[in-house]
Image 1 (tube, protein in one colour):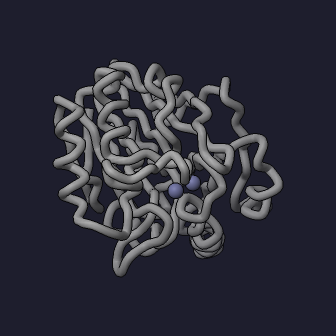
Image 2: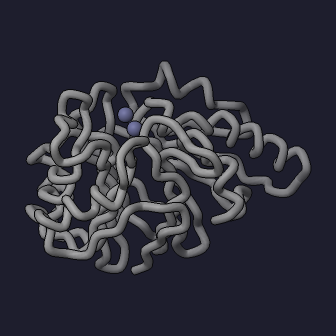
Length: 244
Ligand SMILES: [Zn+2]
Ligand SMILES: [Zn+2]
């Protein structure tokens, strides 16, 4: 599987870049992890939107969902133009049906609700879920294929249960919304130290800091994380990809 970052900001996008959105390609299937604001504008630089037939959404916050509606419109247009005959499947948390059902359009997009214990299989990638601790109900996702594992924390505070969910991942995409000296947990998030400590405790190989703040110098986040995690660290950026 190959995973590429489309959007990496927390909260809101910046000029020419997007909030949370990752593109996963495997065995001819392409799917998204989250579809935040700005994602529709950025995606054509990474993948053909008509090749993306499924998306897995972590939670209802707008920096993870803002462009779902626009994506559905693009699929409706593409199907009308006969560019594709494949509807879009949106996987979203079961308890949040009231929010996500607005994106369901007959013959265009289908909503599939997942529970914590559910398993998905897309392009040979096995996806499992773990509920995080966040103001809106939110789920982390673990992607496994051919003995390789990627974990996406989505939004969360530092949480021991999540450490075991991340166990021995080849890549951990951890949210990092604040700097080391800031209390991220008060806002339902992690700071650079907590993201790094999660990676270290879980014994992951590589850590991406993502869901980045709109203040300070991001390089500082990486410098702070390096004090607590001994593996490879990258700041998430559009186009940053991992293959395994
Ligand atoms: Zn968020
Ligand atoms: Zn959130």
